[in-house]
Length: 452
Image (cartoon, rainbow, N blue to C red; front, side, top):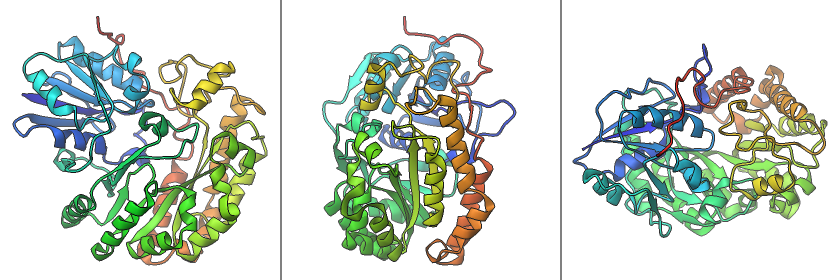
C-alpha cells in the first residue's frame, strides 16, 4: 500500500516566495508517518516549498487541515479525488468544523489520531474506508514516535520541533485549542522525550522548540521534564502561561535546563479586555511588571504576543502596546488582530451579536490573510488592520532592534546575539508580507469537489 502525506500551504502569493518564518517542520505529518505500519510506502510533500505531484500513483492521501489552510487543503484534495484517489483529512479544523471538512474528504478523523490511524489504514487496504473515524477519548502519548525521515532533503528552519504535551487547561475565549481539547492536557512520558531529544542531538540538532500549547499547564509534570533536561545541555524554547513567571522553582529549573526563551500571551494591557477573553489571571500577583521583573532576573528571553480588536481597544492602543514591548526590551513580539476561529466562544459571541463580516472567512474568496473578519467596537476593520501593521513597524524599527539588543538578557552570548539580529531582521523584512496573503491558490483551476 502507498500513502501520500501532504502538508498544505496557507496559500499562494503570485510572484512571491513563501514566508520564511512559516517554514518549520510540520510535526503532525511526522506523527502520522510514525503511526503508519512499516510495510506501507510513505511519501511526504510540503505544499509550502514544492509542487504536489498529484499524478503520482498512490492509494491514499492524508491531509491535516488547519483553519487557515482549509481552502488550500480542499483544492489539493479535489485534485486527488478527481483521479479517484481517496483522501482522508484530520487536524484541528476537522475537530472544529467536521460537517464542513467531511464534504471534501472520503474519510474524516475527528480527534487525535493515535488510537484511530492503524484501523483506518487497515480499512484502506481492504477498500472499506469509513466516512468518519471519531476518537472515543484522549489517547495516551506514550510510545509516540514521529518519523522525521520524511523531512530529508527539505529546507526547513534549523529548529528541532518536539512535543512534550498536548492541550491546555485554561479557557481563553479566542483559543481553538481549549475548544478542541475541552481544557485538558495530556503529556508524554519524560523518558520518551529524553530519548527523542538525544536522537535529534545526535543528528546535529542543537536548538529545540517544544511545540506544546502550554508547557506549564501541568506544572508538577513539567518540572520533572526540566530536571531531566539539565544533563542534555541543550537550548530550547516553548510556550507558557504567565502564571509560571511567579514560580521561582520553575524559573530556576528552566534556566538550568537550557531554556532560551518563552512565548507568553500577554494579549492586552487593558484589564477589561483580559476579563473579556477569560485571561484575568494575567494580572495575578502584581501583573505584568512583577512577571517581567522575575523573568528578566532569571535571564529568560521573551516572545510576547498581543492581540488587538477586543471591545476596549482604541486607535491609541497600538502605539501604547508596541512602546510597552520596546521599553521592556522584549526579544521579539507579535502584534496581531483578533481572529474568531470557528467553534470558539469568541466566534459564537460575535456571531450572536451580528458582528461577523463573512459566513466562513476561511473559505470566502474575498478574504485575505490579516484582513479583519469581524466588526470591531471602537474602530473600523481597516483601522484595526492598519494599527496592527503600524505596531509591528514601530517595534521592528532598526532603532528599536538596536536598543533591545543592548539588554543583557537578549545578548547572553554571541550565539544568541547573532540569533537576535537574525530573527528580528527576518521578521522586520516580512512585517507587511503577510497582509493580504491569499488563502488557497488563486491560480488553481476548477471547482472544489465535494463528496457525492
